[in-house]
Length: 334
Image (cartoon, rainbow, N blue to C red; front, side):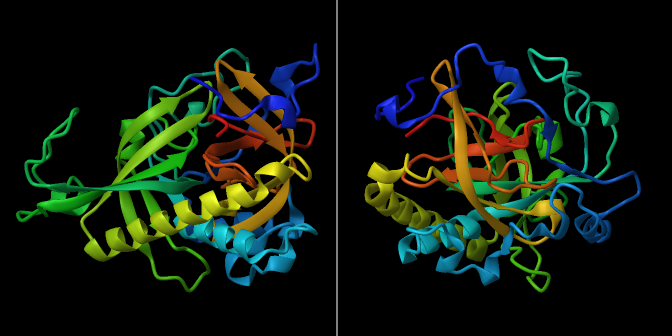
């Protein structure tokens, strides 16, 4: 696949001869709960965090202001875009570990996340971002499948399942949701901005596009709640417009501070924003991945890494390497 319309001159690349594997392998950042633990235990993990004690580099989304961005970017458009990203950011909870998970990260001897709990059902959490919303109706033809009614858990056990429903595509990392067996045991909590946020969920259904080596996953979720679907569709439209506006505004400056923004759910708790810069770039067969200073924690896996001045910035956060940098999964540079 092509890496995008732009020259690579405005990007750093890995120095010749460096061991690339040390940059893009390390500790993955799902939030894993011990057997018997649940969501009530996540605040305990937040308080005892060793990676970012005190979480001083995270800003609760409801407290975000233009002053939280780097000098030179105190801009309402950047702020509005970040809030639009936050609106589409979801907390993913998964209650099954697929027996199909590999023992090692492909091409390495690094243990693959959750391999030791294959076939078991401990809770883990990660992050994702809604990318698309598609309406389905009874008997609607589709090139891969035809479903007459909504396949969500509620409808699956109902005598009157909904005949109108929506597929919600969520971008995340593959080590968060590995395959469709895990997808069916997953849910995405929407608009979890603080501890008082109402609980609104959509439910995992299938895994679409995925790449184990690149740590990329398209999670298909479903809902038959028209209000939820309408709200998400409007948020996707708003994000798309702001993304294009900010890209045009900052494209010529994207290599100056290399600003990166991540909205995630550290430790499975409420939504946080972190701001930093990207450091290195790797290209493999047209796919690109990055390292960056932007703060993350367990639970941040799968959060989309937005690079200011770029269009299709869909790289999922993957983990933290031994050099103190965080690294992404793959996407194209657009």
